[in-house]
Length: 162
Image (cartoon, rainbow, N blue to C red; front, side):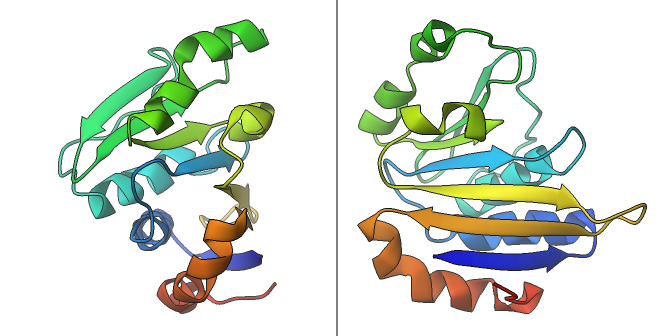
């Protein structure tokens, strides 16, 4: 299960995050990847909005974890600066999921093996000097198979190429 979307501006990246998060619920996890400045935090801003949080969303680069309360607890995690698996384990990702939170992990490809068996992988790539981004969403696990058609529908405005 894979979608390829094009976000022409930061507002579109936020809107894609909003659309994807409309299908997230308690215990879901999303691994976000992409180079510095690709739009991972912008995606999370849209996701947090869809999950009912209307405050400011800041990058957790130096704090590692930011928590927001929407219709569910939202954990925005950044593992970029962590060097050891034990450091990641100490964050308690599994506890965040078990408590019914939605976990959004920047640089999540580095810890994908520590995420629940069912999760989304969101890869954001800059498409050149413009603000456009390619956003590839991959669903992992059977729960995403049952939600995939709805995910295709809510992300249709940004085009499916994969």
